[in-house]
Image (cartoon, rainbow, N blue to C red; front, top):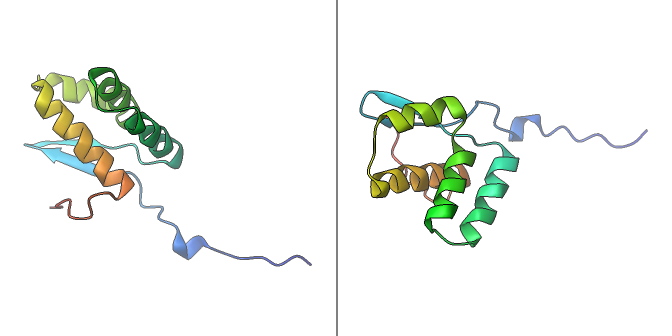
Length: 98
């Protein structure tokens, strides 16, 4: 019989992280495929097109509607997106929780 290695305990099945802004919570897509696409988009720079592409990747349609309703300025939207990316890539282990 072939060797079986169970890595279940090493995996995180808790779900997607959430970013809170004021009284609203925004779920961040943290699946591996999304994170890899985000990393690819980051390698292309942080221009408006890349920011929009990352926004579409990191937040699902329902969450984007909630974010759009905030009517954020571009720099604030970019801060939200970059915080979400740091959260899912582990680039900033100092992201504050509740």
